[in-house]
Image (tube, rainbow, N blue to C red):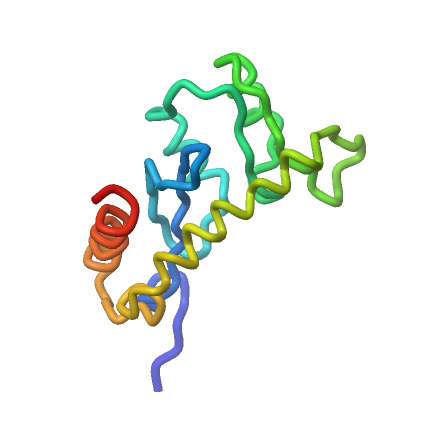
Length: 140
């Protein structure tokens, strides 16, 4: 009997962080193991961040260092605070509702059966399938 642990992680336990433009088209992806927090993906995607006026993200990306880096680049941050935060964070709820474009983008990617069911056991192959699907769906 096989039991998964940290040293022998199951093939489908990986997390994909993504960057999208204002129209919901993907412009960057980062894949990590499933046990890693969203901060790792955020740090990896910061380097190639294009010029932007504002950024939307979910509660998983709520970190003071992340907010400071974005503010230093002149980007307005619309991230709701985590529930355990002692001081509430203000954000524009109306603009935050536009985050559904990112979820719609992932829904369109999952129209590709290979991505929705994660056929590929190798993370590199799965990531390549995501990139190929994104290119065909949004950029061709």
